[in-house]
Length: 279
Image 1 (cartoon, helix red, strand yellow):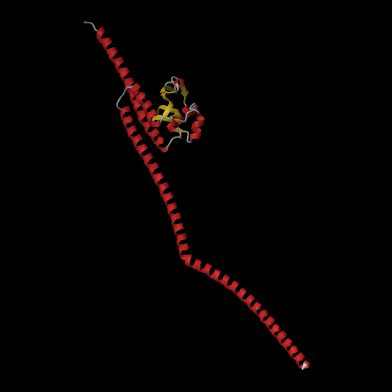
Image 2 (tube, helix red, strand yellow; image 1 turned 90 degrees about the horizontal axis):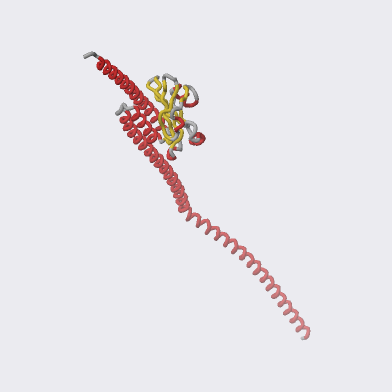
């Protein structure tokens, strides 16, 4: 009996060891399965995240493309607006220039009418001075007339430069003499050149000629503040028109004055002759 009880204990111990071994193996398999599931769960989570991300992009893609298209269209519209704005500014500037040209031409027409409405030499010179001031915008200038006997230019009128009145300039001497001799308009082109002249040297010389006959020269030394940016193409046109009208008016006035003096001399001589006739 004792031997049989010992065998039962051994058998039960083996059974317990077997159960423990099976439990241990089950636990090991469970842990391994758990590890596998955890890894699978992480992988699935990453896939879900990737799918969500890709899904969001796919959903938003059309809207993002539309936003990019609208941004580009807005940029194009801004560029076109800026271009139109520049064109409007150019048109406005051209309109102002055309208006200024029209005003200058109208003023020149009125001035030329005034020039040719009188044969009084002093009045003609005064009208030319007013034209130079109002249309050309000259602050300092001198009108030189050609003395055919002396073959020199003599200053007769002007503004801001009294030393030129009565001064004579030989033909070909300096800018004034060169302008008179060549018969070509002289103009300093840039504001820098005009500034450098300092109001002492000529910045523009306009020869007054009737065909090849020299009448005189208008010399500009300084412009008013509003004109100191320089001369415009319209100023050149004004110079050319003024040169022709002023030359004609001066020549006509000088010729009239000369004829009037001769007529007065003849009348005085005739009166003298008739007064000495015997009764």
